[in-house]
Image (cartoon, rainbow, N blue to C red; front, side):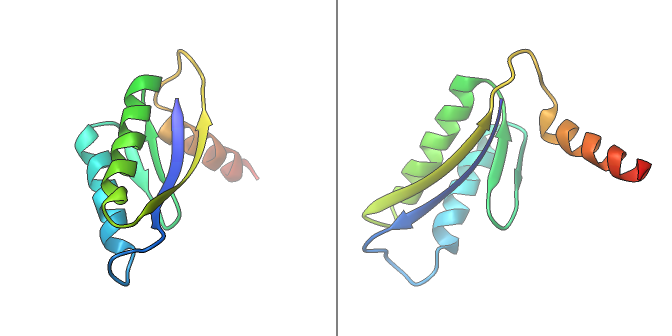
Length: 100
């Protein structure tokens, strides 16, 4: 499965910037060892259901230290038996664009 998610502190935040909280979440993701990518809006991970959800929970727990609440946005592509889709999906679109 591929999961794209965004997690941020909400309510009574400590500090002015979310970058510390986001960095804490991304650290959890990177330490998980799962294939991952972070951009300006989302972090995307790939793995099996339980391992992906454990990483999302860990990221939420890390961000929870920075505010009274945690906001989570999550989108998942669940395709049993597939792997390498973090790059594969993008590669297929790029190949189509080269055909144009």
